Image 1 (cartoon, rainbow, N blue to C red):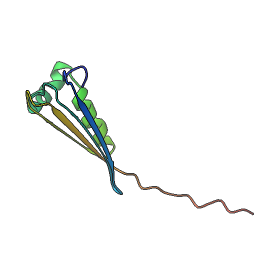
Image 2: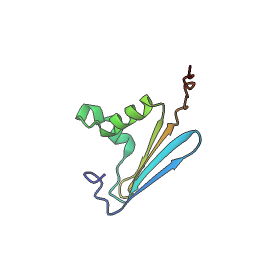
Image 3: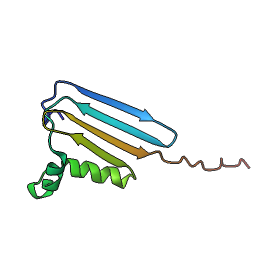
Image 4: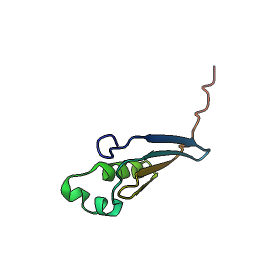
Length: 93
C-alpha cells in the first residue's frame, strides 16, 4: 500500500470468530480499477494481488478487493480457523 496507494491513512482490522480469522486493510489512497488491474496483471509481470489471492486460496480462504480510482482500497482476507487436534496424553507406565 505504501508503494502504490499514496495513502495518508491506513486502517487494519483483525477479527477472530470460532470458525474464521478476518483481516481487513483499508486505505484512503488513489484507488484503482480492480477488474482492469487483475485482467492484465500476469502479462505485465504484476503478480502482487494475484499472488496474495493464490496464497489465501491455498489456505482455504477468500480474498476480496474493493477499490475505485480516487476512492481508496479495501482488501478483506478471510481464513478458516484450523481445527485443533489434540493427541492423547502419553500414559505413564
